[in-house]
Length: 253
Length: 202
Image 1 (cartoon, rainbow over the protein chains, first blue to last red):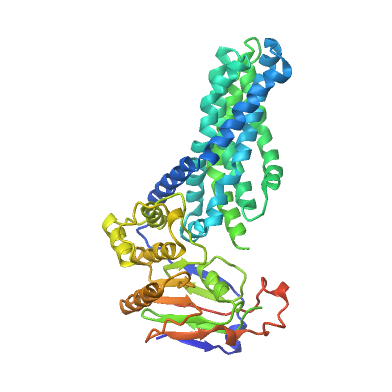
Image 2 (tube, rainbow over the protein chains, first blue to last red):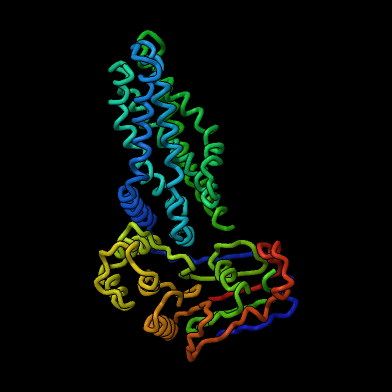
């Protein structure tokens, strides 16, 4: 039977805080990951605005450059790697608001924090779904947009590869900032301030790999791509843990 | 500070009805127990539980069934479609599987959430205002769910303003544990409770 009673002072003097959560042993991390991934992919594709806005912003912003700078092929060709990469970075940054926001408003984030015995697994699944619905479309349209900026044909595969390696890093690093600012009203600017400094190395290596590929006489681009791969491996293994910790902090307020 | 010297032990078969005036800390106590709020002093020992809070916890863009499947996957367990169907018909929503949750009424949403209790297999139910938005039949349903859960060696701690009048329920009135009366309580202290004690054994 239960006891509901005022305890005497000897129990009140204890000050340690222990939460013992006994998890059942038949829990499968794979099932948690797949279940979360499928759910977030469905939500991502169904909320059309979240899915189309970054893509539209990317395409429109790239198209503005020939209007502003004129159609001189040498100018456009020289700025193309930097423009493509900066705009991809800004599109990813713009889309980060939606990563946890909807779940936070609907109260589903709370349930994920409660149940996600490894919350980092769920964060990784969420970021992967978010990357597939927002960043992957950018990578896929980038060859077409690159042609509009006169980027040489032989540099386009390198641009796509560098974006494929770099945008997951942007999404993963951004997820830490998004998790920290999810409970902040209008935290978009704060998110940008937190995350942009971390994006700089990715931008430098990504744009420089593409520029090196466009310029056949200069040094090669393999080194930059290898660095991007290093960033990707590091962020896949470390960012979900930071994101999970940040989510817990945000929800505890 | 919201409350102090609070000791609570819930064993299997127990139902504890948490009451108290607005702001007496019912939600805070449940959130502390669920591990959603670290702002307390004391010991908490808790086993496998399910926590249903104020917010709906349903994705409006997903159907009832998709929400159920996702919730089942959260705990990493395999739940068959039949079990999900059974849970839905038990809460009076048979045939609602394909309907998007954004189209449901508040009471229907609440029922979808209650269906989680039936397929989660958690021993302890932590329910925060489970009767919100429910009609008379819904209130009776919650009463029956808790009664049968406790009969089958489960346990429940639920906060409510409207007593469920369960035969076996114990009452815990948080109003009695408040150290400072509500009018005197400085608001800066709400987020900083000290010396809260509520060991819970399951």
